[in-house]
Length: 401
Image 1 (cartoon, rainbow, N blue to C red):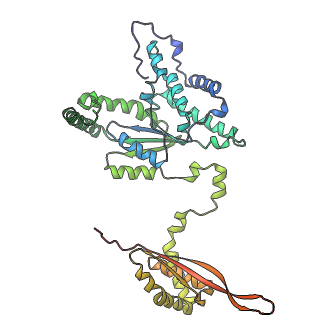
Image 2: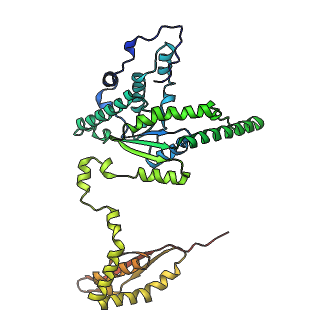
Image 3: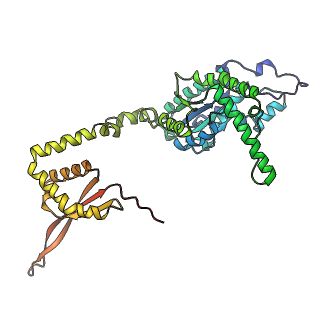
């Protein structure tokens, strides 16, 4: 339950305003959304990242990193700030409780805003069992909407829903140490701002200056946010990030956890169509062994052609490549009939690969006037074939200055 800020001099809200059953709460909120927006406008974000972090785990530091990684442009939705909206303040001013029904209603409406459609990061939700159940029902309704509108012009607005549970975790001792360290930094910063008049004051949180309060804050996190998120582990994509490591390692772990996975994000029909094509990782996995096998096979089956290609590279191409050592790019044209044989082109590309270069070739055909018939005026042309080789490699690093 979130703070009510209720005036004790006013009568308490009737018990029926605090509906405890998740199904009743969700149904009531959902029916109101359908009434206010219409089903075709219930367009929730295609991706939700439910971010929980222990105090001092670096949630603020890593939130923007996560948003950039997942191409989420909307600002994070911080539920505690969301409950400071005019709607929530009105509930509290009338002595009402900002309970699960109000939290779910306000949050769902926020998620329907156009700027949230590419994805949203939720901070501070869910925190109760009722909210956990409402989140599950939201996923089910989003799936149902996707099925309902799949054959309509609105299909693009109802994507495969993707929910991520991400927990940035540090142990209690580390959390307390970081909270108190932040308190010391805040004092120094604010003193300097007061002295110089330059900059903005940082928030001074009581938990950053008192070990007991810092410990209590960690306990609340474990009892509410952490337990609520872990309860969804078996349903949604769950990511546990050890945030006690250095920042670079933490962010490497975040990248690894949130790597694009087509089987999770594509429409199943699209995925079934594309899955017949191999993944780059599958091709790369045995690339070196396949290259060695092919080169050795050329020596057995096409020894003369292999030597001609090697000679051509050594005598005609490498001098040009060497002159482009700084840029790491050499473009070479050739009309050598050696490459009329497609096998020669294959051998050349494999040889450059074995030597650490990346080579490509493009065949350019040009008709060149060869003779002219004075009687008929007809021009006879010959076909000129130009093989355009492009060789790429890591160029020289030269210090300038």
